Figure 1 (cartoon, one colour):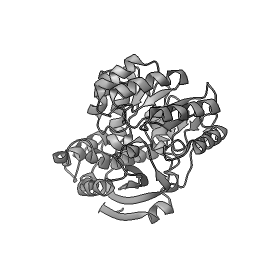
Figure 2 (figure 1 turned 90 degrees about the vertical axis):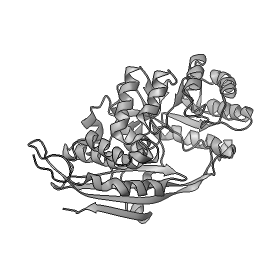
Figure 3 (figure 1 turned 90 degrees about the horizontal axis):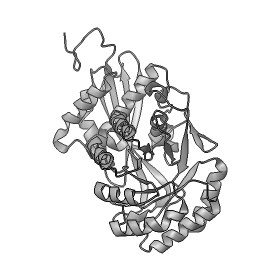
Length: 387
């Protein structure tokens, strides 16, 4: 068999990647956003999101695009790493996604197989899945095998600590009217009593049955998480998110065993191995992987398989444009996180109805990159030659 810059040529090889384009864009937020990490002095308010886009085209004319992101620092680093390894895609059959992922991660293995390296790979991996679904003329959820055509959706963007409680309540009321299925508000302030009062106000507004969750963004220690978690039990929350440091699998396991309220975490982890620690230690009731952080859809599906085997529920972090499809393909009823921040990056919009987000019937992810996203682009790189 002959080599053509990638996979050995065989009868089953149907196409080749001919062209790759990477773009780095910065999405400005309408106002600075703060959570508990800002109040503890560990981070500055969030003002923009760095987006790494990947666009692919094959010799036979198949196209795909994907993206990953970074909040605060890291965007230029992701772009630089992706740029350095993107040439490895040229000449490969775009259908062999798992093998290509391994090739990409080992191309940069000296800097690790998690963190910034996998976040850079994620944009390329997601673009390959988008291409494969478009080639099949199927929405990505249907290519993977959907269990549902709509997914429960909750909103986070209206409950940040940078918003006074009056504004949070106004946002919650509007979201419920719009058709959202639940809301999540931020906690983790220096005085837990302030958190409790904010949660009580939201619960009183929305009623006892409406799904409400809280998110401490890793800023509690173990005793605080236990005390506040017990104080929150009467609020009938559908989960407490990131009560402890993301890597404290043992602490989360103790908390999950002690509380009736479900515990959720996983969004900050950047590898399958890190999520496996949570899963095997019974650290969570809801696992929250982020395809853009763990290395794309290929790695996300490994986490999903382990989580399903362990009987866990799932609520992926951020990027609803990607995670809606992955939630639709998860066997157990999941939640998708509604964040409208990324909407200006795309021409299409997702729909909400009766508390659920509707899986679009468009092929692939179902999105095209907007002219606004092009205008926010600060750097780009191409490998190969467009057919």
